[in-house]
Length: 102
Image (cartoon, rainbow, N blue to C red; front, side):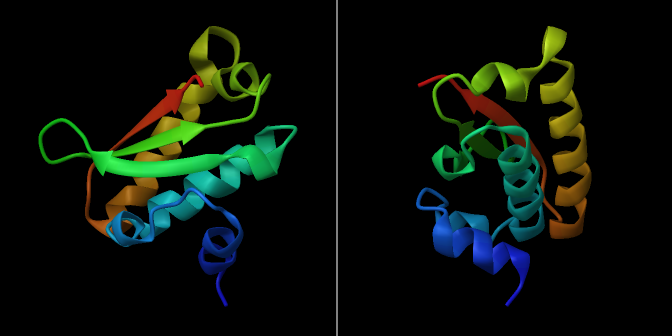
């Protein structure tokens, strides 16, 4: 079983139907965010149709972890976006990564 399948089994918020459109990008995003935050079980990633033909990956984290994911002056968030967009090229899709404050 791949890491992606393991992540989707225990990640209650990944929409499997939409994640199939960009499985590599979702797996990379899940792995990065879960390793940055204090509470990896609170990480949830949902997908939706973004602007144009882009797939939007919406990330929400537990209380107090949003600052860790965004980083100083947004540098961590921008780096995550860059890596996930590069991973999405293997899926053949364009993605946007949004960090949701719950």
